[in-house]
Image (tube, rainbow, N blue to C red):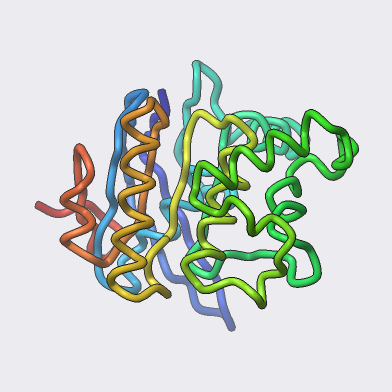
Length: 221
């Protein structure tokens, strides 16, 4: 489904160059739940950002459904991300002045009127799916950390994406809430959603079908 071939990424700062990814190759079949683990600075988040097209690699190929995404224009990548990719982050990235429902509808704000009955109903269904029925009109400040992460997942679900990229989705949550979020992500994978998750927690990594470990920009055993 998604294949990375000899991916390299170098970051430059104040005249210094740091190679964060070093000839990384990886294949992700459809329906897989893949965890990427490693210590801080190992390159795992950068790899996730490259796989999700949020960051362009300096070298290598990223093949999705037969197309090399590294040569695709930004407009094409934007359309692809909107249609097929969703990303959830450790710190939710919710708009503070929008309700839970409005944050869920955010991917469609520019292309479909968020007040359409069909879309609003779909947003409500997604919030119900993640356990937030009855909290559609609450602002993020009136939701717990776990509930805010659930809104972020609902926002990913509303797009009917094919791949969910999750960057430390439980990193800012307590253990009990983190386990609930992981149970939800695991259920979504069982229903057919491909999941690529970065985590520092070995217990959560074990929930995946496959786990790879990164160290200093490469995969290690």
